[in-house]
Image 1 (cartoon, rainbow, N blue to C red):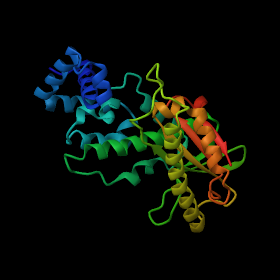
Image 2: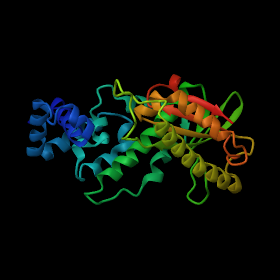
Image 3: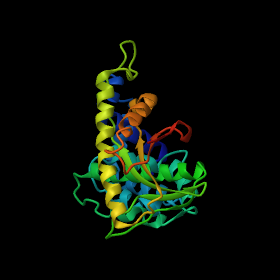
Image 4: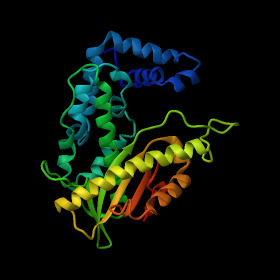
Length: 294
């Protein structure tokens, strides 16, 4: 057998370096020789690599049910070595599988989690669309896991093909929460501090960028909550929450500034009256997330 899990991981790491301009530059325009060798090995044995992906995935109990169809489709699309979805199959920690182990017994309607993502492109050039579907699923899975860790119960994923509905309904301390989930895409052009590559959280350009993005997200979700309330698919006394999941390092570093901006935006009561709270969730830990109430 020419392809081992270690070779697969090195090939994936090399492909991701090649696919990320900043990362590629940090390696001075070339990838490590062992990664380069691994990529060539996969290119010479694509069928064996794909079989290894499926075999490794099927060793997990829950992952295939949620991501199996996406993984199989992604393997037939271009650029699969650089796909974060394929990378997740070879995760040493099996982070996603562990989250699913906690979620599946505790979330009613979890089987519908893939129902809203049925239109997977068959075009070989549309691998980025499959990756985007996977990222959105991963964002909701992380949030469901965090809700369980935070002591929420009666967690449900309501689903309707005909009526507007929220992504998640949950309870805590006898209060119902209606949660709309959105995943913020990463910025690639943060202004950084003069003495390092760290994001400049005092930069007016960065703050304006954050404010513009958050305003756009909240406008869409405010309108969505209005449609949901009119459809009668959530209780009127539910706390209406917009959960913003981000893996953007800049947002995580500037979390305090993000919190202040959200508070400022929500202070315009008439403009955002259908949103009660924003849950800002960096891709780090539950403790670093922030609940900002109107």
